[in-house]
Length: 482
Image (tube, rainbow, N blue to C red; front, side):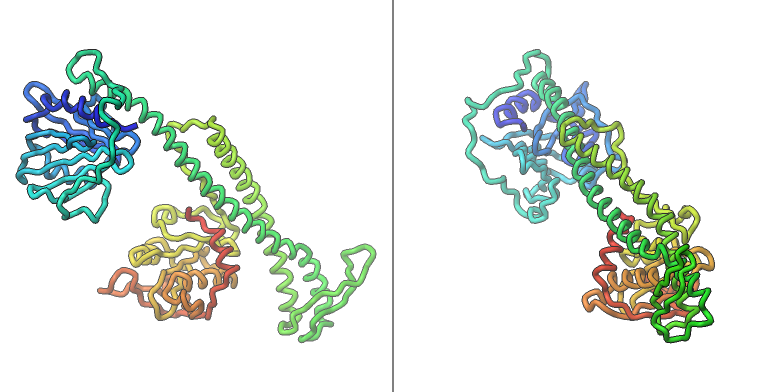
């Protein structure tokens, strides 16, 4: 609960004589909505705390020394530039309201700090000599440059009926401030835990949802690959009968010598391919099944284990048994190692970015630039010489890079995945189809004297792509960028 009007009046009566005529020595902004001023008066330095936090908006002297961010926020930087060294001329409360105005004289002349300590809409504003708003904490842009007008006055509880929580019974100097300081130090500790709990709860819900989509996509990929389980047998049977199969045949019926009962089995064939081509297709699809089973099965098991842990943590929050750790843990990211790469991600993969990140149907990492600067960094910083590079032809759009092992060729589905992303993140997205060029990264050169992202491409090939909803959903489910 914020200070009420009566409490604000009492604390101002206590601190105004102590601060009047003092000089601003130091200004800090330890949190987004809290300011602390070190004010030097003869023989002593006072610390004035002003909070615009909705639940605890207030103003009083403090003995706290909270840690500050490594870089001061922009509002704090502005205050330091214009108010450090300024002299306090007056402190007054707007009659019958929770608004306090502190007038200063500094190198820019007379200015004022207006503290609207009004609960949900609490704010801190800086006024120039003409009483125009030149800066404000809540970033309500429509007030900048406008003459200051106090918020609409709401009907207040009569002062004589407002509870007085802080009496300053110790009788020491600034004893009311000391009471307020102690009360809100405890209250804000509780609020900090509540806010950390809610932030973690929301983060967990997002991560669980994403993990569920990712697991579902992997399970779907595994299910599709499992249909190729028996294709090695088909390949061997075709191989044994290769000389008897004519091109253009749509199916063959042969003796299945893998079964001890030696039944006949009918094997479908692609009539557009040669017998050798059909045999190679069956062997290739069986290898795809083996790779999927080897890579996806443990990946799914690990992800499901992590999902259970996340759900347990969420349940603890909802049952009130969760306590924030000393350092909040980073939300988990699934580490993907693919058979295609067979090596750990390079340091460059971790240093550069963030980029959009996906995993292709075949398990290859795909990176997509978000803007011209990232396009430049992706192509000429992250990408290796043999990586595949793609871009929508003749239109502004993202650079797309597929990480390949040296000398590796991109599988057809990986190529179509990457080309789909190049089309999606280009100006051709609305049309839903278009041409995408691709080449090795080594054939992409920076265009001298041009803006970031402008390149010269040689030895490119192209393919025509239409945005496929199923492919896009599968790619988004396999995105590795939270």
